[in-house]
Length: 495
Ligand SMILES: NC(=O)C1=CN([C@@H]2O[C@H](COP(=O)(O)OP(=O)(O)OC[C@H]3O[C@@H](n4cnc5c(N)ncnc54)[C@H](OP(=O)(O)O)[C@@H]3O)[C@@H](O)[C@H]2O)[C@@H](O)CC1
Ligand SMILES: [K+]
Figure 1 (tube, rainbow, N blue to C red):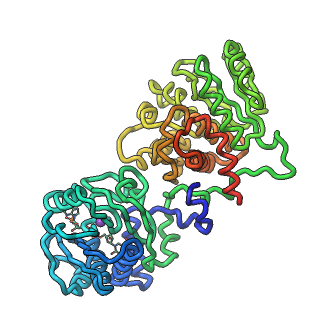
Figure 2 (figure 1 turned 90 degrees about the vertical axis):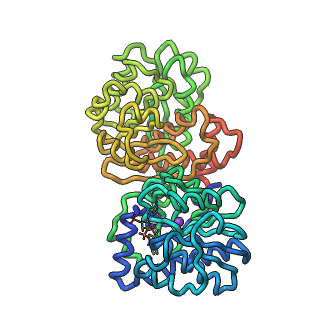
């Protein structure tokens, strides 16, 4: 089961992610509150040394220091480990005399030799500390930094990264030449780059260390980005109580396509397992026998003409709609999606229904005026939204443009709201990369929306539940397994 559930004390404040700029602001505010930069750096380096001592027995350590404060942290780490009796060597990019302020002060406390950075210094090291660049990375790695890290990655010696593996951009997770670490120790809060790919894979295990940053700093910064976790939405997750009946738990309607009928059926099971009191698939009459013979608690409503479908929507019984899974990319899907959006009721536009807007993305923006969630994967996203920028930036811009919550799927799914809030999800196992899992995801989100949860909370909770369900199953997962894994995930959430 996902380990995050057991971290019950985690609060939404702890899930906050800070950009590189916000982290620099946190430092400034800490200093203004009376915690000196020297002390912050001393705590940072000591935290790294502490984690190393927790993870490994004493062995020859090589600390690679860079020209900025990341290098300063490295000097503290070297000093603390050496004081504890570990055999430590330091190699540096540039001269220690070019270090500034607190980095220079901490470097002066290192009485040992400082070797010049090159692949040759790796000889004899059994643990490497990467303190070359962190938040100040401003361009691709080159020369000795690139060559030394590349050589280190070819061996079997574990690498511990301070703040980020050098070469990973803290805001985007992009790599400008980074090599994988087995452990990354960062400070105060994670940055988006610790969760977005490839950054997340390059970090290995991530530990967030407290370095004495005052808690009030977070309120002043008011972060807008979070790591997905139940602490963000559990209080708003719909729960059946003794006075609820099936009608008060919402009625989800899914557009059922033909001849691809499996996708809508899987979405329907996802919605029902997520707690929707009633779930109906509206299907063209020709497909009615197929749907009706394989569904039990899910209702099937046939319609003959697009007008019939319109009448169905205008009835007041449904509390949320979904169109996309198996819908087909055609004018009809385009029209049905517009009809759903015109009601102003909570709507999910997924899969084919997103692609149906590829020739007219502006029509999607104009049509959205109620709660709405779009759930594209990368190629669907590119058909209707601007493909430029990192994943977090792109998803935020898309949500702002169209006025809907946008869920840009992947191993590092980003959920963005039109008001600028964003959540990065990190609990999805690779086994989710199989046919039909997206259909179940949109169904789960639908089930939550139908019960009255907000679009942003439904999307965040749906994505997390989907990942937790897949983790619950393990290898060999099929999309159709996912709905039946949700009860176990809910049980754990509520226990
Ligand atoms: N709360 C916190 O966050 C705390 C943070 N702390 C620590 O501070 C770190 C941030 O420090 P930082 O700002 O000095 O940046 P850092 O990463 O050391 O590098 C800057 C230097 O590298 C250079 N440079 C850049 N790219 C390069 C390249 N490709 N190749 C070559 N050179 C390159 C760059 O040159 P420039 O771009 O200016 O020309 C500049 O000289 C942070 O990661 C954390 O470890 C803790 O100490 C305390 C609390
Ligand atoms: K680093």
